[in-house]
Length: 385
Image 1: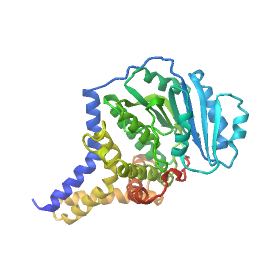
Image 2: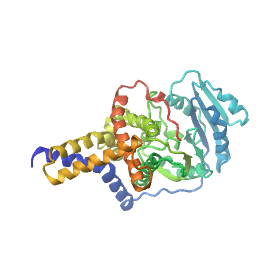
Image 3: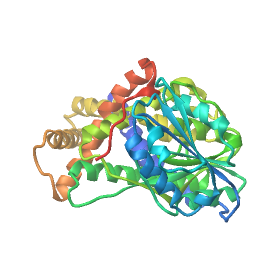
Image 4: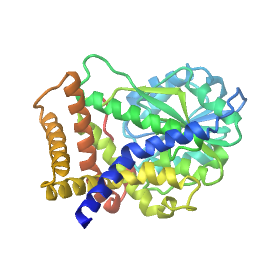
């Protein structure tokens, strides 16, 4: 067999492993060697930690949302980090008049990791619960998170981000939601037989004694803090009952901004911790390498599969592969340019393919960001909706 067919099948196998093979394997592991969490009510206290940058209009509503939920009586502190805010969050906090709320202000914007490094040493709760300010918290979320810590093997618990949909959603929003449900399925299976290599940044909890300082320019505190905790011999699990709600982005470009930062953060992690991808380099090196890092190579594999199938197009099998790929990418681009079906089965497929195509483009851009950006922690946020 010549080199081109070997290269083609290597590329196809790589893409299959990244998006289907690994999820199937991790699902099989969850079924064959499950490690259930021994959940039970407990008396652990909690510190809520939120870092904000010019989000004062949302802050009071978010804190009321937290304090109205079950388990709020176990909150001993709410630490709010003002990361260079110019919209006076202290005014929003004053009206709540709760002595547990403390504002820690930094006059210059440094990024969320620096704020976390300042806030965590001030925490007194047994469990630190990290949140973003935008999303709405389910009333059962705090209790659902805390119950997992009755199991001494659990060091980190990730909540579940749920996208709230309505009839006005675009096809792109449907594609984003479908991809996120796929992602959560993987995380759930990883947790069932071991640990998840990261948490949902909008809501996760960690034992205070398992926290470690993180680099000031880090993009992904929700991966670094859990991975550093897992390295100490504890698990990071996924709790679907700890829900937090948001709206999906209504266009693929807006979602791409968020995803590009996340992917650049994965490139950054590969730079900082290359040994985490190797056997023995981390307790969950396989999950980390397969889930977080392997996806960074998928655009190269896709281009390789297309190029080799075109070069081998004289054979009907390779011609069929080439035509299928061209048709899929064409449908995705037409959708991106607002041409073609926007509803029905074909519209949903086009929306999903558009999200997938833009993700591949953003992986390539993320390589540049992750290798050259001076501080990914100060990346401009993309709003949902």
